[in-house]
Image 1 (cartoon, rainbow, N blue to C red):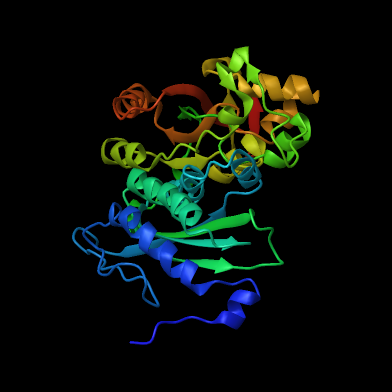
Image 2 (tube, rainbow, N blue to C red):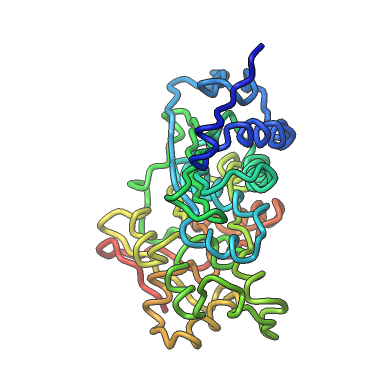
Length: 346
């Protein structure tokens, strides 16, 4: 069989053989993500997945897509590429779980200035780890070599996920009423949002001159900022099994003020008690270094809470117990009051 190779294309900056090598290197990582619904490995024209209809009366597919954003620049500066894929998966599956859906499959899109197979495989290893944490299969993806569009050490990463939930179990925020409790799940740090502001505050350019050991961070600034986004899928699925959760919010870009209202109705407010949850030290550092008003902090970052659940007050303590039993740091952080769909911080 004649192997695919183009000397002319390689001279233009695209090495198709490097792409084949990258696929071979990533196969071991993709294999870790295979679930019962997985039909075929990577390399085909489409990723196939068999939907198990057991227990589903009216299955609803829920999809989500997102990228990592300018946090990618930090991974490239650090030459550390094995965790950024976790962020990519997290930004998609954490959105899907807000509808009550279980993520089933994931696909990634990686655009590179130069295809370095080992680096591509390292990036995909993080995507695979994120899929394992979310319990979904990595069924396919695309690596595009784009010389002249990206620098040789630059790349962009985005993803797409599909989940399923029975129609009767789709979370219904219209059931929220005054007196409901708000439970927050702690974040692992900045996650993958607000990095344009982070980069401005710390003067992050094209090298590591900004990086330093910071005593209050118990480590380096770069290492802290590269901490992967926490994936909340499995703990939230466990919570749905036991608790009548009414609404869930993934706290991403836009922070509290933009995201929490999306999980509310127009006749209630979410009252959040700022002192009820631990504030990761990276946030006071960002605020101090950038001289940023407190409202802007809560309107940009997750401030230590990556996901919230609104549920009956009588079940709040049990919800915290379930989530903490799944390895989370959960706490009651507020309550619902009559209002106009706003967030109130006190």
